[in-house]
Length: 358
Length: 241
Image (tube, rainbow over all chains, first blue to last red; front, side):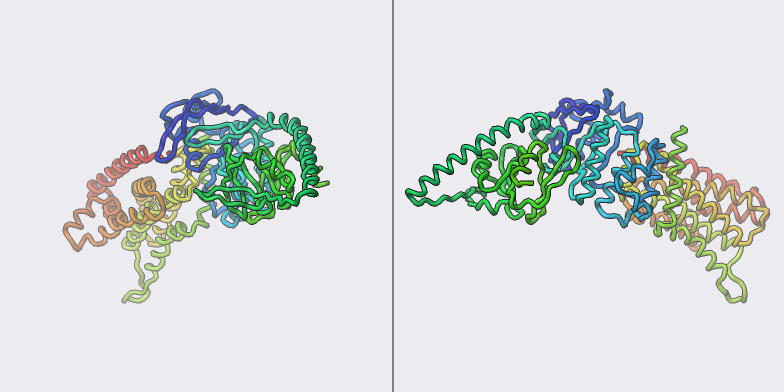
């Protein structure tokens, strides 16, 4: 549906460097990138800016040709949008429904996005989450083939996020190609589909979810083996302890410039790995750690840490809540300082249940 | 074309719904009416006489032409730019022309209705209404195009005032002071609204169009020039970028 070939564009401090991307119908691509780059990418896709190099195709046609015929099939929700603040939610959707000659009933869409009960409220009195859902509802009035969504769930409340994720999933099921962009890596994982990181070095596919599900089965076996090994090691250590008293200290090093900080594992809320670098999250702050996530996992697994996602290692003591957004996306909510939400892989849920005895 | 009419209709309906709630613009649009109701009831030196007739009509009409026809439309356009609502419209297959049409129709209707009310408050002989209606509509068209140009150039509502106040001065104050100063009189003689009031004075006094060929010429010249300027600005400041 959307195809980007060798796209290159340099603008002020932002650069889109030779990227290739294609989203087929019924597929999702979630891109982690800065807002500026996201804006630039959307402008390029919409033909408002001309690329220095490369081509963009929508539905097999050159983007400019496609857009000339009107944007009836392309929905775009920007992170920052203007709404007509003085009219009500229902008036707004009715207006767009008439404008687009929409075949879908706007009341159905209001229901799907939880706007039915606030239909008579003025838009100016809505909360952030309600406004975001209204923007999405407006785009759902179109006969979508491609949906571009900037920051679908950033800073959204829990119910709002769930509704947006459900609607995205429903659209995907109907064969809409979906492009999400977000500044938050966690959000892109939650949004699912093919996950990319886009920066000045180009675009990088993070992982294929399908592959991950296959790997999970294997890694499950491996982990069983490793826990067995650990038990053996512990037994050995126990034997040693009887002979010579020994202090077992586990400290996790983090680097700031040329200093090395040492954290107690209990202090760490969770550890995130991005592009091969691990970041310790301690009391709402991030510290870079020189160890890889695998090494950290091996060190911390017997201290109650759990690999809830390929890129996340969580301190189970901090987990407050387990959320099911849709059939394919799950999250853990921590009771740390920021009430962080971190992704939980579908394939690791059973193991988590087993560990927690639930 | 069919789609175009449907979209303009939807935009128009939205404008009508939004209009009373948009205090900035709706209060401004009521200003001419408030003004002439006030003037027509002011007790002068002679008892029971407020302002009447051609003077009242001219005051009301020139306020309406400048404040409603020119200023209000530029504010409506600039507001959508400022609040980023125009972008969403443009991404919903609305063309800039349809966008402008939706706003223009509202302001046009409002201007004409106000012009008509002013005519009847001023208690001018009804036999001239047809002439009055024709010429006031033409000049309303001119002023709306000027307003449209301001709206296209201004990036937000604030800058419509910056650009619009000189226009108010030029079109409202200069004709008022025309008698006081030769230069001002010369300038006034090429303004469309000033020529409109001279034209109307001639018509109402029963002279018809005999002495008014210059006034008519100026008005028609403005109509053409304003259209050219508007189209030029419209092409330069494309709204959908």
